[in-house]
Length: 97
Image (tube, rainbow, N blue to C red; front, side):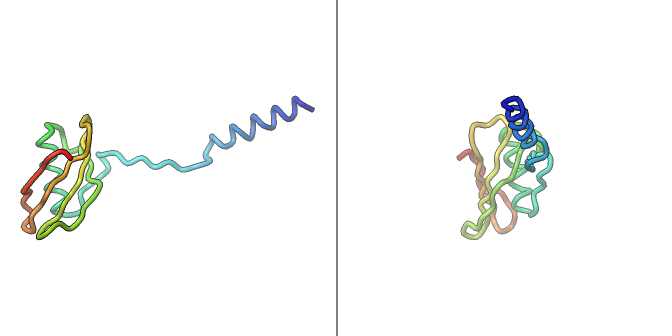
């Protein structure tokens, strides 16, 4: 009987490891900026850190005055980056946070 309980516990434990949940991973290569401000910041951060666009991920956009504040992460950097993009699509500021 104890052997059956041990075997049942092991099977149920392992069953939770196989297909039990869905894990979604988003890589920078999958992320495509959806607007002009995102694309401008994406390029500006890539240039500032000396990396390819595949190493930059845009994760937040919000209105900021007459333009847009865009936040991004870059592979190998210690923290996020912030861009201010004017209404005309020009990056007015790009800097680490």
